[in-house]
Image (cartoon, rainbow, N blue to C red; front, side, top):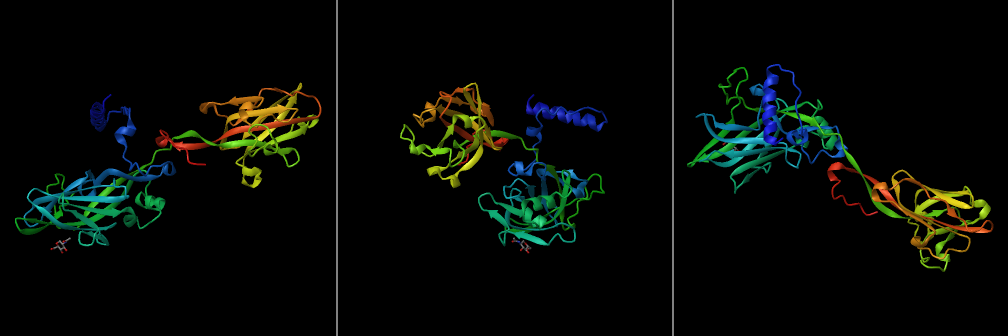
Length: 394
Ligand SMILES: *[C@@H]1O[C@H](CO)[C@@H](O)[C@H](O)[C@H]1NC(C)=O
């Protein structure tokens, strides 16, 4: 269904709802059609927190008619001389007012005052005279920014949002605004103001420039529940470690690739069954104080063979595992040359794994065991950021 045909259908559905017909709304793509949030704000951290809609504004003085622009009138002659429009779209988390002159008029400046009640609508002011509003000489328009922090009187984002949306996922506050636009036309100066109409008049024909403030209501909508995607980020190489007695450093061996940190366990055959230790990452120079403990390993012996069970701690997973089992000293410290290896695809990376049984080539004396793994960090990424996600440096 195209966007416009969906909109047409919704319009006709809305019309039939107005006549009391009970139908369900066919919202095939609600997120696209009805995204009303200030999308830069709705991160996973703000899931289910109500924030002001970008453009869902109503005019309380006009029976809560919905609009985002309003005329500016020169009171003495009741002549339209411009308009102003507003939104909450600005990345600055502010009410943005854009004031435009009508053809033939030039904006000279503008003053906006603001408050949360009719009595206090001048409690804060913004003007082209003091930098609170800016006159763009290229477009001839005035832009005023009223930060949410000013509106709410709060500074922390969550406090600001809860003050801006005190009713949660419903109507927000009513803003009272005093607006003067100073214009010129053919050398004459004018002050134009909004012309709030009287909601008690059903036709809205009686509009009264003597109302000194303009009222603006807005709606808040809760940010959507956060969808997260799991990503695996390469964290590092882990070696099994048991204790200072059984664990010998790889760099004490003279075989290939042993000029590195890591350990092999030199264990009497009879002690191998049930032997368990830690999986350590990043113990450069075999310095245990630098290592990150990412899980455990256990040797299970049966029928002259040993299986090694790996268990990664929460937040880690195994990208590949390699085990070397020999009765003589290891002939290589390069994992690719161990007696056992298994690599997991990114999608099947696993937190727990048991190798198939590996033959122990002796039934007495010492067994030399290397337990190795490449370890991932498991990261939850908001779905919106998952495409092209780059793992942080670890
Ligand atoms: C607009 O005009 C009024 C009345 O003349 C004046 O008080 C005010 O300072 C002017 N504002 C700006 C921004 O020039």
